[in-house]
Length: 163
Ligand code: FE
Ligand code: FE
Image (cartoon, rainbow, N blue to C red; front, side, top):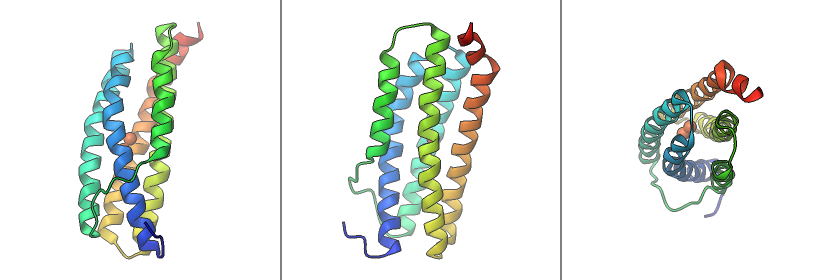
């Protein structure tokens, strides 16, 4: 794919993010399965449902700008998920392992926030106001998920893990 214009780059980024969300939809159930804290399990399941809606929303953005998923591979998400899978293979104290799962999940959310923030800005610069609004909505959701994970970590898991 040639990148000759900001629109080309915007389209490329949307395809990349679409693959990232797809990879995450496969990975989140495994992370939830390995979590010991019911609160963490619940948060990961909730974000799985939200991630499915985010991918649908992204497909709406893509059709709005005249593109569709085309097999771009998101190597960034691939790496983050691979690291997360290493975490899931570890043996140890359940609270410490939960703290590690939260850390892995927050790295994913921050990656998504960077990707959606960039795409949202491109959409604005291209005058795609509706697309920008939809991308901002997902960006806000990723930010809220990140905050929720911080709260779960601070409320009990990290405290237990310290003992
Ligand atoms: Fe997402
Ligand atoms: Fe997310």
